[in-house]
Image (cartoon, rainbow, N blue to C red; front, side):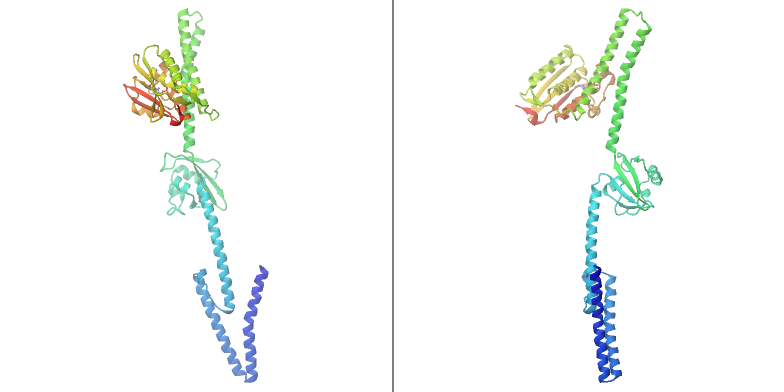
Length: 439
Ligand code: ADP
């Protein structure tokens, strides 16, 4: 490269010297043939013309530099041709580099836009130098107007402003953006370069929700276990303090203790069922279930549970078998039937039905029981959600039955439909996909 440049330079000097040598030789010739005056006048004239030519080219170069574009590079002959062609090559190289850099920048922008986190670059005065679309969304930024704006004017929450002015960023800041208070953001500031800072924001709404659910769940389980444990504990202490308690009182105490223990046993059994259903390690083992046989079993269990106090009917309107897990289906159907019995006053009627709706197999339990007010229906499948806490407890409910049914339905791609009217009864239906129907 250096050699090439030197060659060009040598060429330049030779090309520049040739006319000068020719003029000098011509002047000397004129001097010998005529005299010094015409020879010098000739030389002066030629030099003036050369100077005018160079001045003109310099002017064109200067004018071009004011708006240096490749398509307007001047053309000229002689050594200026060399200068302009070198300029042309230089501008072309420059444009090529610019294009490559722009493509590179575009790739980086595409990569940061695809990041699952918001990224913004702040300068030492907290002004936004750049941000990706997710950061715009998180902080409600307008890429056109908010460029180089102080971020503390745009995100004014005191905890955020305080965090920016801190010097220790090892812990992220968790906050709710002012305009999206249903969103929870985890924010981290990473200093880099000379006084630059990277502001990373992550939407942790879902994580926070799961964490809140987990906390509620632990609190609920503890609460559910505490009551029966307190009762049993009380009786045990009583029995210890009164060793000569009469037989009848002791039997009654033992009976009540057994009831509470059963309640805890039911709760633990339902919790284990739920955890098994939720675990990824328990895939659905499918078989073709003969619904006639299965429903007969569920019906007979229902009769035992109802103790002959209800008009319980079974209607098998479809001959379709069902592709699914027999034990899970039995648990879901049993839960729905047990609820119908527990929430229907004695003497009420309950109908178990196996039918088809537009090719979709449907299992339903219809009761003439207490029904459910509309506002409770969307929340029934939440764990421990009960409309009437004491009625649920009195009848041995754990508050987990419908959560279990919902999980089983999901594992079978089925939908749980609830139709109910307060005081008039309810219908719970499991609607299975057509592909699960076996003829
Ligand atoms: P529980 O053990 O309390 O019955 P579930 O999860 O099975 O828990 O049901 C949740 C709540 O839904 C019950 O507490 C009850 O209020 C309501 N529920 C469920 N099934 C019926 C029904 N057939 N009739 C009226 N209310 C019902």
